[in-house]
Amino acid sequence: MRLIPHDVKFFDLFTEQAENIREAAQMLVQLFDDFQDVERRVTEIGFVEHKGDQLTHGLMMKLNKTFITPIDREDIHALGSALDDVLDLIDAAANRMVIYKVKELTPGAKQLSKVILHGTEIMVKAVSQLHKPQNILEYCDQLTQLEKDADRIKGDCIARLFENSTEPTEIIKWKEIYEVLEATTDKCEDVADVLEAVVLKTA
Image (cartoon, rainbow, N blue to C red; front, top):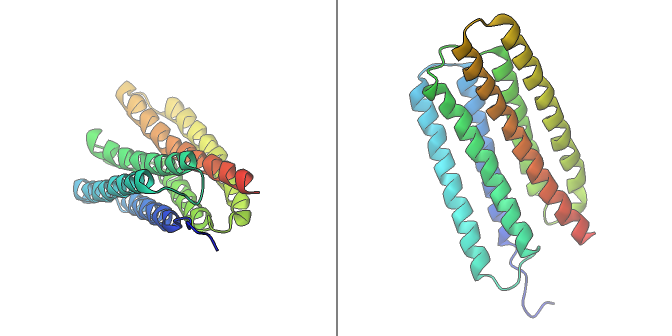
């Protein structure tokens, strides 16, 4: 019995963060699959992102007030920040639809949005296992593979873009959209890297 128990509520806060990110990813996929009423639905994704900012702020406030933490303080900070970065980029991808006045989605953008959603689903599973980290490494490997898949899809999309588009503005617009979508999976891999570091420290 510990005289000063570890505060395991951090794990619940991480899970809440991850579930909020998954919700935003689901909304992005739904938007891309049914590309109507875009501005309103992008705004709704922004509300989820704002909730994520509040969750991250609450996590950091709790970190500052907690004497003994269940994992290293720097890992709590790194994981909270990495999760927040994923959500920021989902929001950024959605916002590009309004900023660039996108009228129709490409198959590649839809495919990348589904890769992002799959990544967030894996993140929820991984983060929810922090109390028994021996199960996390498999999820980290899956997130790393998803990032490689997204990088390949992005490369194929940009290659087709240069082959088929004659409008320089369209090339610039879609190249950035693909890069933001793929960068979201990079951030998912960053989450995996932090989780892997936690596992190795507790092994």
